[in-house]
Amino acid sequence: MPSNIDVYIGNQLDSNLSSGSNITREVTVNAGMIYTTMNCSPTNETRTRAGFYYDGLTTYYYVVKNWDNFNTGIHIEPNYPEKNGSGYCRPLDCWTFNCLSFNTPPLGPGVENGSTRPPKLPMWECLYTDVSFIVNFCPTGNFSSNQGRATTIHPNGNPNKCLDVRNAMYTDGTPVQVLDLDLLRRATCPGSVLGERNKANSPSRFWYARKSTERESVADMGVSNGKY
Image (cartoon, rainbow, N blue to C red; front, side):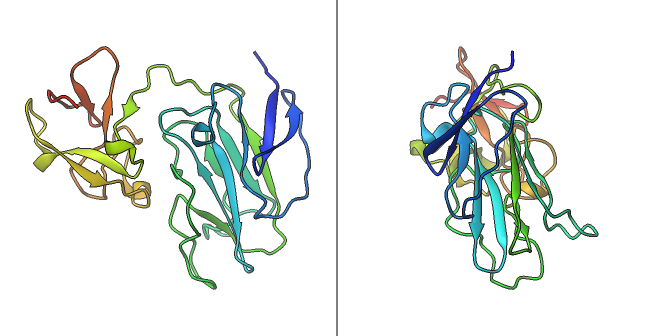
């Protein structure tokens, strides 16, 4: 059923929106993230958030989400259209838990001022100083569902670390190792996050733990019988 949502801007409750309604706000690009707390998202770390950054020359935009608790989809669209397939000012769609996004807020855009090419995904860029954005929650018309989702294994709770099957040997008893999670290379890998490699052209895979089982699922649907 359609549901009202509370909209926050920069950690401050801004308004309550009913289904199909909209608001217009004039805020600085660096005012803070835009998000909603609806659909089982009790803490800031588990809310799907729209983020923006302005460096004085260009505007960057991105999504931060928690892979284990995707509370709602977000659509971000600049008021300027993409021009000639340049990669700039593209709409950003994050409708499912495996969309391209950050799992923690980035420290900066990661590109130099005056760059002649778009930044690496999951950062988007629009080369205008007067750009404005539409942020649309629940673009599919429904809240997201985490039912059936596996839980990502992050060693020591570090969201930038993952488990890997050593030497890509997907047999029972194979040792595992801890690797850095390479977010920027995810855009070059085929398939969704459940089936993507940790790095481009690498056989390493993400691991997930599922409830009611002693076997941890390897992301390419192989299994290894270790415990964690």
